[in-house]
Image (cartoon, rainbow, N blue to C red; front, side):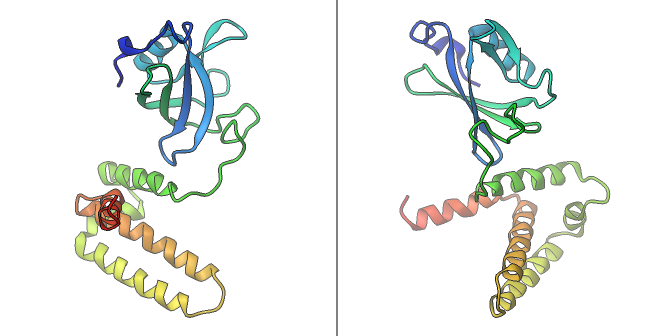
Length: 201
């Protein structure tokens, strides 16, 4: 978490803008404002709390709807006058019922972060009846076999007309690859680092 003492509250007139971002897919969910008390409550409870400029009172997002924002991380910008609040949203964020206050989310490759999070939880918790749990219990050899099978199925689907089957098989491959990497103590992000290195980033 951040050092709250480094926030320039005077520049912000006592209220700091808080940009709320979904930790799963990096989408921007909403913009709110925090007072020192709102920020401290957010840190203490793990539930994002704002200061309402209209009602001039503190309010915890989701206290009436149940659509809370669970705090994952706080980042202070370079000027110490704006917060990036990374959260796990519980339900839609906007009062209109939309996922974000900026309209519905659009599909993004950043959803892979959310997939990684689900696989991570399955690895740690091993819930009974879960296919992912069964793969982890079966071991690396089985996980590797599934990646091989899905890779072949992707290649075969690419040779058929239409895109639906190819996309379905590609999704299966990405999932099983994520599981295999986790089984080896790695993540998709580690493979992305290699790609970045190859491209000189």
